[in-house]
Length: 399
Image (cartoon, rainbow, N blue to C red; front, side, top):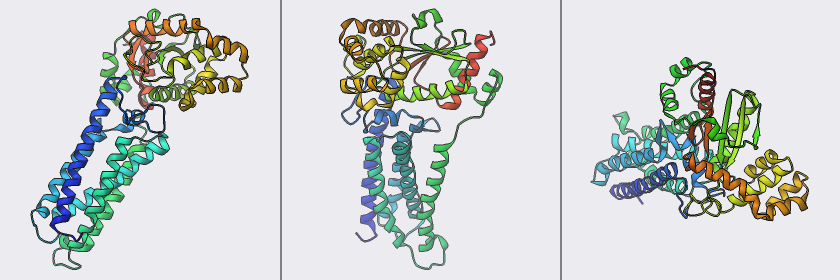
């Protein structure tokens, strides 16, 4: 297709498709954030095609706005920039320069997001891939517009060299800025509530607004616990072994335990599976109840936490064969494990946790109670540090 009005018109059509795909992706991300029971055929939690873990990760938002919304803005701006050329505008101008930079920048940022999903989260999101495909088609359509510019012109804005610089510059700047954003550790460190509130007033307000529940109501019998019983911070985790966000929270808590010996973690079951959770209208995670039972069977042999770690590390193989493979790996008594797994009474502990969680207002996983403050979902690492500082001061009677 030669550069000209037709190419601009195709670019507008592709950009409008991008707006639609971005809008639907934003809708899915919003539903996932608001409702842990939301499902779609293109989103398969716990598999290699998992939009939930991608869209609800910290990289799903930029400046506290969904990346999909930024996609809508970029595509809409691209459609407007292509409009003059589509209406028969002359040889390359400022609008085309901006369009070239925007299309190449969008491609660069899409590559960064794809890298985060594949290498960071180790999964892919079909909605994100759809947006990426639109970006690639948009770039392929727009890039030849650089040929509309003159090899040499009296105005530098009309030169082909300038157009090519805009094309390359948009890509380089987007990749560099996107990589810096992806690797940015977040706000700085703090030791006191005053320092936390100075670094992040928004987080302090968020923390203070979290519902507080007496710890005696949250703990239950606390038989799945690790850490000192007199720790100033106790985190009670209502979790689901098939939930990708729970696996992320598990990794965070594991890392924190290595650097903060003064907190205790208590695990409680809340499978998003209607077979053992009456609060669920349908089974979102169909192996979650069985995985919970298997963990408790390992717990009967004193290996709950080791088995817990294996379940989260192998979320894609949570079936009966997998349960026995993990048991053999931990050298459990297999006949005893089998008897426990097949015993209907094993689910009593799971049901007790589910009932307790429902009574405490748990609706999604992970839900964490940090010294009784109810937190839905996990936090980014720096905000975990902030939460521990605030919880530690509250346990000492600070304000």
